[in-house]
Image 1 (tube, rainbow, N blue to C red):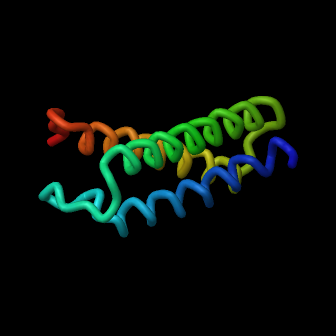
Image 2 (cartoon, rainbow, N blue to C red):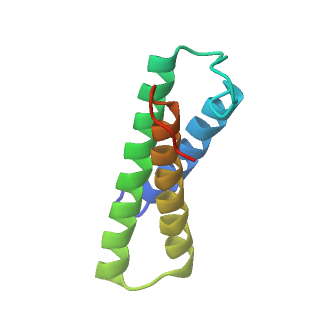
Length: 99
């Protein structure tokens, strides 16, 4: 797998992880989740790291090879997904409030 393929893989994997977390009720107002809280936090952390690394590898490729519009869109999407996973982790963590 080349470095150019990883941001695409990270975006796809991040979308699947986000869909799984949303399907398990991660954003429900109560603490009525379909998965245990620790499991959701670990899956969320995995999604954060994968998408953050995907954005980093993509930025590195953009700086080295020049701007490619499709890769730029994938890098921005990975960065947005990583930010979303970070927000969700803060929201899920007991005792924390994120707005």
